[in-house]
Amino acid sequence: MSRPTLPPRFPATPEQINAQVSAFYARVREDKVLGPIFNRHVDDWPAHEEKIAAFWRNAILFERSYDGNPQRVHIERPDVKPEFFAHWLDLFEEVATRMLPSETAIPWVALARRIGVGMKAGVQSARQPKDAPPILR
Image 1 (cartoon, rainbow, N blue to C red):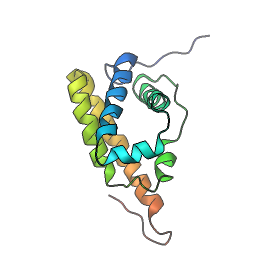
Image 2 (cartoon, rainbow, N blue to C red; image 1 turned 180 degrees about the horizontal axis):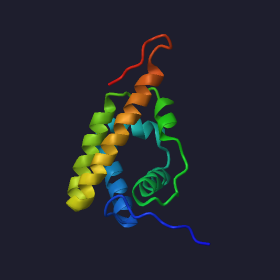
Image 3 (cartoon, rainbow, N blue to C red; image 1 turned 60 degrees about the vertical axis):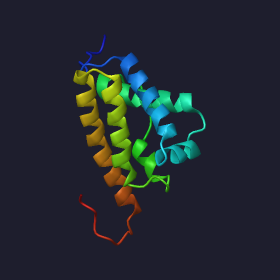
Image 4 (spheres, rainbow, N blue to C red; image 1 turned 30 degrees about the vertical axis):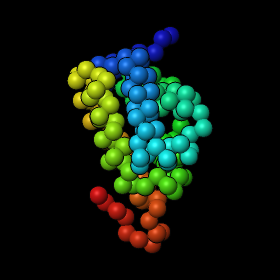
């Protein structure tokens, strides 16, 4: 019995996802803020890019090829600051706008920004003192 497949969230191909991820991380490696952090933590760029591309193929194409916990990974790296997420997302949008047709770039950037809000909140929450009230922004 075959499983029914879901249509993609928006028009995107695995090749577009892989190309966006690759171009984005090339841009990140050059960035003065994010480059040093990523270079400190990523030893194998092709493996990292494949893992992140699998994340996006899962989120966009419902491929179910990603196995990981990005929230935990970001929380476990103290040099990943909540204030860096806006910059990360701006770079992602810059690359997507340049690389992809608008019918793919616009909804993908919107999805990335929604995910980024949750990631930032998770990092902020995990780093606040245990007796502090929760941060709700």
